[in-house]
Length: 82
Image (cartoon, rainbow, N blue to C red; front, side, top):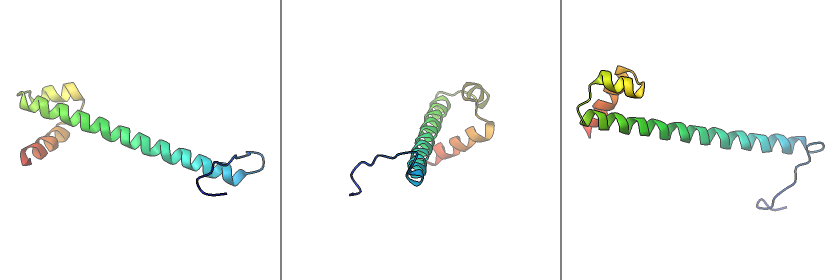
């Protein structure tokens, strides 16, 4: 069987194949979750930058985003370097 062919996994006789299948499912789910989390972080960072540019105070941005003062100041420093 070539590597591109689909293979039926019989859970009663192919335990190793079933473990490999679930390993792949878990890897895909983990990578998806990591990508989703990274995307959300980028979105929040964009919101912080827009708020800073509009003159919002750090306290207001903390209230809007739920981020800490340190997190917002870190984004602000990155923004000022650009």
